[in-house]
Length: 305
Image (cartoon, rainbow, N blue to C red):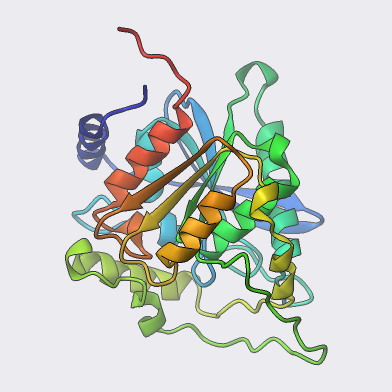
């Protein structure tokens, strides 16, 4: 069942000797707004996966980081492992513009993600329809979980990394007179998720900071975060893989344990990555992360003796 670590590592090394895949950019319209959706595809994919970035940085620095001499693209690794990989730039991030309000809200983000999933499914011929999984990083994990709560029939499963939202906490409403701050992002903010010295390379951080500031010079303004209060772990019936970086301060173990035990689905996995932090998908732990995703998405396949 699934691929072993040696298989994934071999595929990664082989792909590293070839020219890097170029991400295809799709223009997807949801409720009249244009979104950038990036794609990298295996030759014969067995499943599709949509990647959701976190609070600050868009898809390309997070999921398709091209580091000279290194293999750091999470999209490439998933495509090498047999996925049709998509990554969404949410409103105001990367190549997707803000809307006229200049704000992003949780409910709006969830509706946008569900719209992109519908687009993704509609573009597949019925006879070749692949199971669709949703991967969320940090705040993207919260959006993924809320999307799964609302539309479980649309997904084969979800993968949640850096999921640090306490289901017992209640976010307050945004003041009615609040205005978007439009703050500039900083190099210190871009490097702040790389916390464990032996988990990453200097080239990775340098490239990430440069790429992140180029693609996301401005911090996206969120409001009405009290809409996250509608998430109920017990109402989430979609198969779930919860991945925890053992050194991630933004996703404390106590909160992860609380979430996992309350998930309504009986089909749930919890994987802890030793030595990994909030940037696990860009660090040495990315190999183990991909292995966990492959095993989870293929858990019901039967291998020949």
